Amino acid sequence: MGSLQGRRALITGSFQGIGFGVATAFAREGADIVLHGLSDRATIKAAESAILKAGANSVLSFTSDLRNQSATEKMIDEIQEKGNVDILCNNAGIQFTATFSDMPRPKWDDVIAINLSSYFDTMHLLLPGMKERGYGRVINIASVHGLVASVAKAPYVAAKHGLIGLTRVAALEYADSGTRESGGVTINAICPGWVETALIEPQIQARAAKFGGDRDKGISDLLSEKQPSRRLATPEDIGALALFLTSKLAHNITGAAIPVDGGWTAQ
Ligand code: NAD
Image (cartoon, rainbow, N blue to C red):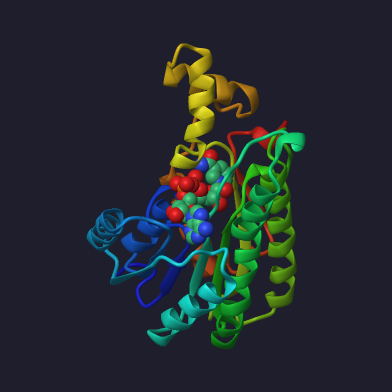
């Protein structure tokens, strides 16, 4: 019997990338999965069938734009009409790189809305039910950029630092919910370094251009700068950690910001 049988998980931004890796890890344990993101019909269908094949008890998909708070409220209402949400993995995010002076104000607004404010919205709507039931897990996909800065990423670094603060406040407010037996309510952040997904592809391509378009050399150059392991993480790596955080054994891990960064933040 899968460890998540009878549990329902919403993973935002999960038709691809890290979110899909997390959804797959939960699906393998028999969870009911709610996928979400902005995607085309074919990608959604392919993701749904892969999630069912991995072992999910059921799968549902939503495509609301997280910049729109009332759309998020409507989505959460529709999800809750069909059942409780026991596990929330806030993962949707965007990146935009430009120096401070070149950063367009609309990009600031988008990054803050998607990478930070939407995380507040979903937590705000779902945490009270988790407390009432004595079990709940919020796993916020932050970044090493929630712990340290890099140039040309002002909105992203600000959003991710803010997200770690948001995670800590929520963890404190919900720390005494439930019991060891029920599993409690925990709220944590995972802080990946470089993970191989579409999000970092423009940065890989920019580096590859320095080596005549050689993608492997571009990746190697990117990693050599900050990630001492010199290995990209995969969405599966992040999914495995997220899965552990859902377990009852993890009931006392809350308010943590856990790096998966090959030593980046140890330097
Ligand atoms: P990705 O681009 O593959 O996936 C991002 C997801 O967010 C997509 O499903 C997309 O549809 C969704 N999304 C974007 N804008 C949205 C909006 N307005 N409304 C609803 N959904 C929206 O990227 P990824 O690398 O899998 O990133 C997932 C998370 O991991 C992000 O929060 C990112 O900041 C974080 N992260 C990624 C890396 C990395 O190296 N890839 C490193 C650290 C942190």
